[in-house]
Length: 170
Image (tube, rainbow, N blue to C red):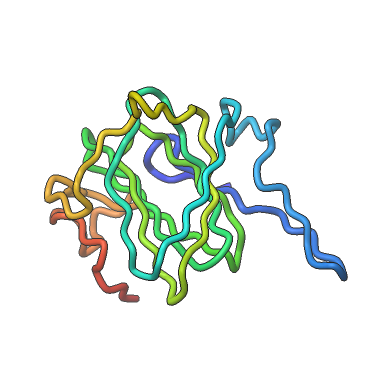
């Protein structure tokens, strides 16, 4: 399991057991106490076209989201408005992992693969249609202004408004 500099943001690889029929994998287990602290009460499915950004929002009543990308690849970001720290996670259907994002952080996703992403995500709170637990911001909100990304203060993207379309460089 990998932990990120934002408390509670974690990624756990999914163990795949292949055989001649295909494979079997446990996506999420109640006894993963180091990863799952409350029961899952709702499961959602999201399909996003390449380059699609779904951001920003947060949950104020304790919701935690667990993202499992089954197809394509997705960048998942969580932003702490108090500390100005951002966690950036990329997960893919090519190497199954599940990302845990505490809902009190502003968070969002972008499909970064050339094909659509198919994501199943689990939550520990039921969606309330009459009183949704969501505070929304525009995907290009200039107030998302990280001072560090994954603990790195020298990343060229820090100290400027977050750009979901910043070209990756190595």
